Length: 373
Image (cartoon, rainbow, N blue to C red; front, side, top):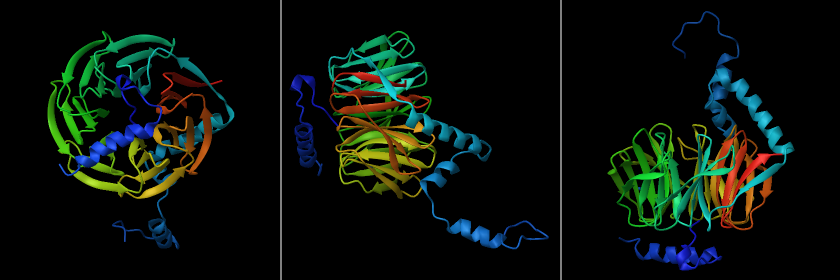
């Protein structure tokens, strides 16, 4: 969801925010038999093969298909252990209070938690000490998106239309990428030098972040809320037209379109290699098979917009909502495993840390690091 800027006197009523943007969007929408010889064939072999071919795909089969056979037994054990821990051990939050406005985005890397806020700053936290490691200042408006670039830098996207590249060790902005015409809502690291961005200017861009050069732009008819790099040189996007699009990288040629949500797409999360989760203002989460675009499951339980998703691993998904709750979902069962309360206002962002530990950020200005008691 898109909160208004602080200097616009942020309203607690999100509908006013979206009505303004939707009006802008509408007004400009017109202007992306075996070959081996076997002496003896087991009596029922052919029937077994036929049955396996006809067996319908499920989230469980697609999940396990992504895991190497040699690792599957251990994966299932760890899956069971994590479920037991999630069910039996209560979460206790450690609260980080330093932002002066809504916390809009979180990322975790190398033991550090980075947060972007409506107060125009980025803060980097050391979760081993719970202290601020760096404060990055330089944007002129809200910071909506962050991405770790794997070279000792992070990228940030803002409603000031800029993307900035920051050197973490010094806190210095080493490069600014110009080209978007409106809010930079989402960033996704692609490779050693490529970064993707999505914006409410209805454009997806691929950048060489080492030089600052825009390599490819695709113009779309609707606002882009979220993008995510997938395996096999693919990029997913979620938009105000209620669809998820799959694009090839780096050409940004559209390969598939997933339809099923009834309102804007807010967040995407990759589930191993073959599944994709999406969340929407329609209060639902959908799980898709990436190859075919088939919706495998719809998860319902939130009472308002689902703003953020993060994959916990082993078939468990985290979601944060405007209804002020965080939910943990068991995907193989298609059910909510646990609901967590703790924020005083809308939850805009959630991110997995490790071993089921996660963090959340809210309009209440707080970041909460949720650890087992």
